[in-house]
Image (tube, rainbow, N blue to C red; front, side, top):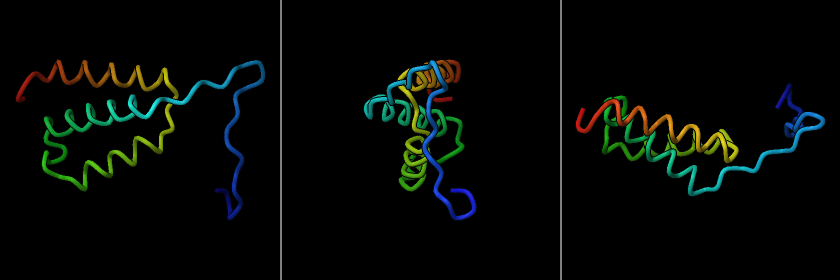
Amino acid sequence: MIRGRKTAAAKAAPGQKEKAAAKSADVERLTQLLFEVLSTSEYIQPQAVAGEEKLRRLVRRLKLNANDAVVLTGMMRQIAWKMGPGQ
């Protein structure tokens, strides 16, 4: 919203196709991985239900396309792997 006016949704550039939105299962998988990484790093407490809900809402607001969800999930897996179990 700009100065009280609603803005139109972003459209694909001329000559480009709009990419398919990420499936909810892919977004949930990404959210869970992100939560695990943030918990392991002690950025958030593992029992923090409110923190998990805030994170879930944040990821949903990103409105990722299918490819971006796959790329980010891969990034989170790599980070989790590098951190190792119980780090």
